[in-house]
Every structure is written in structure tokens, then in C-alpha cells.
Length: 189
Image 1 (tube, rainbow, N blue to C red):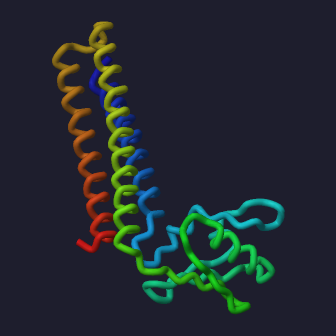
Image 2 (cartoon, rainbow, N blue to C red; image 1 turned 90 degrees about the vertical axis):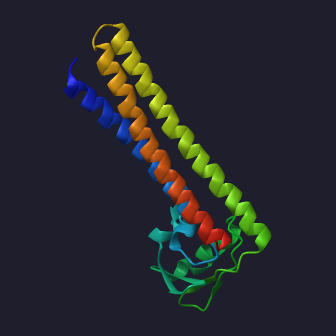
Image 3 (cartoon, helix red, strand yellow; image 1 turned 90 degrees about the horizontal axis):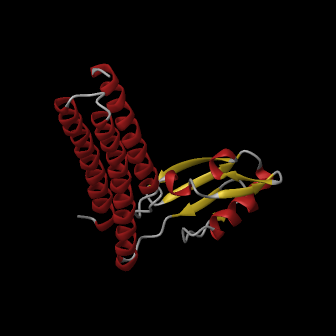
């Protein structure tokens, strides 16, 4: 076991933690802040052609104004299915169609709803931090086993643990920043 093997371990740790960070970013993109964002519709699936299809695969989505999303179906016969899928989602949106496009007004959030969504943001961020810590725990266990099996020296183990902790701190810092930014968008701070 040499330094290049440890570099491989660090690369695995970074990859695992990057995956956790990406998951948090995706989850937070789906949290509505009162401003229109097509990402909030990512979870909406439309009953089309005998299957449940993501909305963005049956319509082009655009944001002509800060509080409006417009869905233009590729197939006009799906207009009512798109409207129904959005209405039945848990987003609390009330779409309308004019025969050409589906207009999805984004209502202003009440203070109570903002606080609920803020709690959700904190939960997603905490889940991400826990995921990062799990990756750290697994890496540390591998380092300790390598030392115990005499495949690396005590110095290599200590350096490895320090490096894994540094990578962990960086990723948790990024999750904290993403959470703060989303909270600022939500609560207007």
C-alpha cells in the first residue's frame, strides 16, 4: 500500500461526498421559494401514452415573469393531462390553460408556509451532512483496518484521517452555504 492507493481512497471519498452534495442541491431545487423555477416541477409526472412521464419530457417549460411558469405541450392533446398532473401534485399550484399553453401562476408564500419550507430545507441539509459523515466514517474505518493489517504506517493513517476530515469539512461547508442561500431566498433575509 502506498501514497497512490491513498489518493484513490481520497478520490472515492470526494466522489461519495460530491454525490451527497448533489443530492442536497437537487432536493433544495424542488423547494418553492415564491419565485418561479422550473425545478419545482421536476417531481411532476404526466399520464401520457400509457405511462407516467416527467413533465419536462412532454412540454417545454419557460418563465416569462418571476411569478409565472408556462408549459407548452409538444402534443396539444396532453394539455388537460398536464394541467391535472400539476394540480394533483403536492405543490399547491393551480394551473390554467388557454388551449395553447398551460399557465402556472406561482402564488406568494405565506409566512407560515415559508417557515414550513425552511424546516424542510434544514432537514434536507442535515440529511446531506449525515450522508457526508457516513462517507467519512466508512473511509476512516478503511484507514484503521489498513493500519491494523500493517498495510500502512501509523503516520500514513494519521495523515489519511486528517485528509478525510479536511474533505469532510469542505463538503459540510458547501452544504451549509447552500442551505443559508436557500433560507435567505425563502425567508427574505
